[in-house]
Amino acid sequence: MARRRDGDLGSHLPAALTMYGVSGMLHAACRNGRDARSQMNTADTITPTSPVDRSSFVDAMSCLYSGVSVVTTDGPGGRRALTVTAMSSVSADPPTILVCVRSLSPISAIIRANNAFCVNILADNQQHISETFAGRVRTGDPYDFGIAEWSTRTTGSPVLSGAVAAFDCTLNTALEVGSHTIFLGEVRCICNREGHPLIYGRRAYARAEEAR
Ligand SMILES: Cc1cc2nc3c(=O)[nH]c(=O)nc-3n(C[C@H](O)[C@H](O)[C@H](O)COP(=O)(O)O)c2cc1C
Image 1 (cartoon, rainbow, N blue to C red):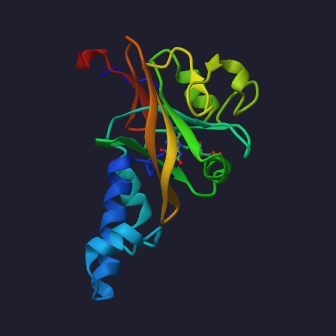
Image 2: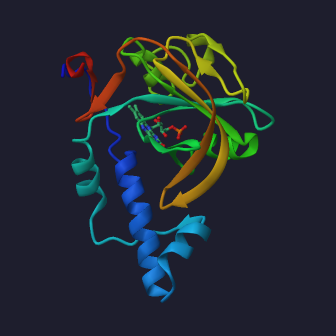
Image 3: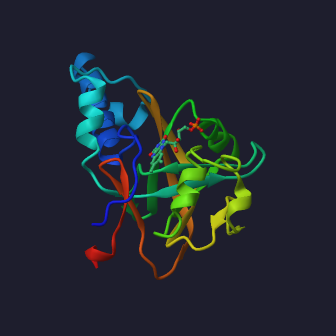
């Protein structure tokens, strides 16, 4: 893998958040002497307790290489987008994905208000779009939709032109876990095309063509 640039976002990885969520739920279930399965089905806020310090966790998670996506939403709550690595497939039947977003990010409340989101998997020539929607631009405006072309499909959430895949979803469930919210979306429309995805790991962008 060809490494590219630096950054810091070790706390946003899907495996980590899923692990945190499940261990938090099981922990709570054991504490309460209740059945873990019923806790998992009903909880919508989980506060993990862990003896592990944050920086060790972030450092260890940075070794996981992930695709980079921009999650978008538009509707009565407004239009917004955010760069994420923390997305994952959850179920094929029905097609369901998850995305983990910092609960204090403005987009979290907007996704809830719009009841929909779209996860756009970036191509390896879209690093500047990743930086824009991470709010890390050197010139121009952060979070500026004007830097790319967009369309809409089923939910009205923006679909990014040139993305290698896009999953247009209605919001199924929002589960708060520590600092982040896991948004589960039922996939209503899929767009995909040929191309190499943008990769991020060890706090740098990388290309994935060697993985083919
Ligand atoms: C490559 C990359 C991946 C990121 N992954 C996530 C993520 O999975 N979840 C998340 O909440 N923030 C993630 N971030 C951070 C957000 O994009 C953003 O920088 C941060 O939340 C601050 O913006 P805000 O004030 O709108 O929240 C990532 C940033 C970058 C550059």
